Image: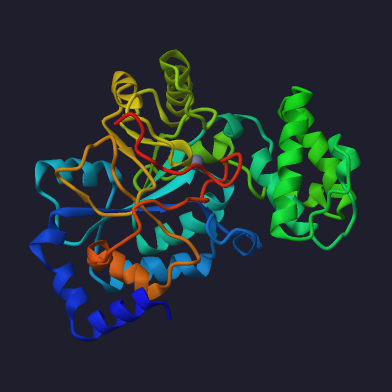
Amino acid sequence: MRPKELIIKAAKAVGALSLVRDSRWRHERLMILCYHGVAVDDEHEWSPTLYISQDQLRRRLNALRQGGYNVLSLNEGTRRLYDGTLPPRSVALTFDDGAVDFERRALPLLREFDMPATVYLTTYYCQKRLPVINTMTRYVLWKGRKSGVDIAPLLGTSGPLRNEDAGAQFKAFEAFVAHTRALEMDADDKDALLGRVAERVGVDYAAIKSRELLYIMAPESVRNLPRDLIDVQLHTHRHRTPRDRYLFQRDVRDNIAVIRELCGADTTLEQFCYPSGDYDGDFFPWLRECGVQYSTTCLPGLAHRGADPMLLPRLVDTMNISDLTFEAWLTGFAELLPRRREFRIDTDRLAPTQGPMPGARNI
Ligand SMILES: [Zn+2]
């Protein structure tokens, strides 16, 4: 057990977790939880920070129920946070990207527990029925790790280039990205190249694709989400954050247009999530001009009334967070423990590499 877990265990034994959970301090705070993928197959073994198992999600929802937490929709949670009318033990659930695994693995549990959630939908791959290429490349390289073959010839580099361990897979992934950029490949070209890489490392790419692993939900699936339970919100069209007002707003407006087409022209879209947790103070006025009121980051913590609504913290739940630590976060106790100021996130399926450092730039 890690030192921090020992502290939490001792604190729980003397009732400190319950004390914090039932305090006025916690009452005035909203815990926003962030999920990316819920594994359909073995994705959580490949990336335990990007994917959790369905069993873990069930345990989390059970902890919310057993702990008497009030799971609010994000809209209600953020409104009541700033109105000062939060109920005790407030929590909001968010799922980034809007993947097919959300529909298959998370939605049935949310229905069963009758808990609302927000899906931050990125819309390019929703319309384009291809897997998210960057993530799929990393997944294929991991799945084919035992092949021992040299894939350099496929990627236009001098070999050998193998994918037997995490370091080698990362190198191969970088070579893949560099090669597709050099040849200015579009999404279809990249997908075809990845098919050839998969074949070379002995991975049945067609089978993975037929199961739509690492795909974003299809337009029809988004249309059919239960409106009383699931709210679809903004995450940019192409999952990117250019440092240019026109380009940035174009991505947000494209995202708005597709979501309104799928969910109704009168859909209120005021919630935004920074792709890959990448935020910049310049974005705040640009987002407000697009109608956004609240934006969430991947910086862990509970949101309080004094927080900038464009910088709301969220706890990214992963396979590496134990049930005990998760409980400590829900109660608010974990927020009171000393933490490293900066940490690396590698929790975004569309991030080109392992994700950026979420530093406060231009703020
Ligand atoms: Zn994302």
